[in-house]
Length: 174
Image 1 (tube, rainbow, N blue to C red):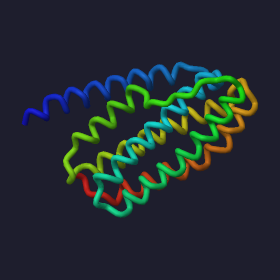
Image 2: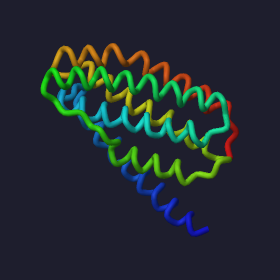
Image 3: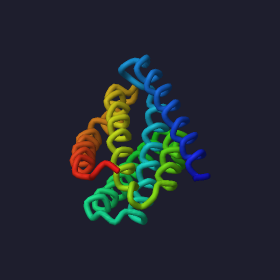
Image 4: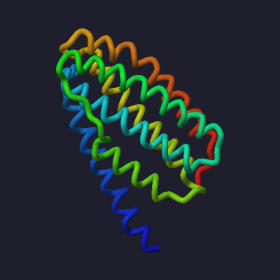
């Protein structure tokens, strides 16, 4: 049970960071600076790809694996579009997952095979809700093309959330 202490600590830290970032997001205006949007959106995209790759390795559930492959494909595509747009505006993109998402990925890595699928899909529901909120603010970004990117990407993210909730609801609680 040595692994459970670091896992419990990591889960508590991830929860605290999540609660703090939720309070911070609630206090922000409805719009977002284009540079901040690009940085956050690209980091979230990288995190989606990395956790999806982990799901492709660890999951034995075909629905979860199919969802994970969709995450890799769709988020890789969106990140490339965002990177091209950012480059044209001389804005930087994240090439590494943000700290909170790195913590979530680590928790998923430590999960046993039997509880991995539920943990991954729970993570996907939460992550997509947060990303949708970011993109809703991005629709009001100070740059028209970045706002259009957010507007164009939002329906796909909403589809991801709906599918994540559907799969998550079909998995047994472990």
